[in-house]
Length: 93
Length: 124
Image (tube, rainbow over all chains, first blue to last red; front, side, top):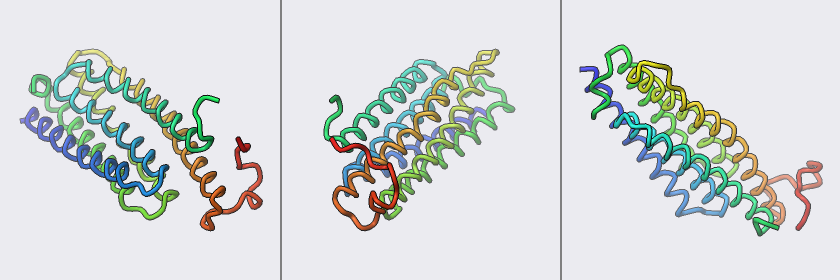
């Protein structure tokens, strides 16, 4: 019984996170300005990271945790580089 | 579904609630990103939503792995600390970049650089 509850909860959480990724993707594609797109991309990678964590809960494997950690690290660097590009026109001066 | 079937009920119920709550809060933040009107309003919604949602989901993950392995497993704290530290930095950098662009375009919705001292980055 309890296993069934957790399984359905994880499935529902994955559906909600998928909807959240759809919202972020809409903002990424439609814009209207460059900073909106970057904000959408930032939200998209955090949501994808959380989705990987829920897959890890479902499977009971720590491999998903490591993938989520790498997404978190690289996504932050990407967002910082894009924000710097918006501000100065180049990343490495 | 190998892991969920081995969890006892006292751990599975809080984990289920935490996972659903975290996903719902994250969805609320992303809907705010979709629906709010201006960029300066939009920038707050996913920042708050993903931070709280991430906390709930990572707590559920730590609870599940701790109960399953019979010892304290808190490597989720790595992700939690990292995202909690970097999300405000992201917000600040994006808002500053957007403010800079609006000012250089002479947009009337934002205060000019004379009104607020020393917020403009040096011109490249």
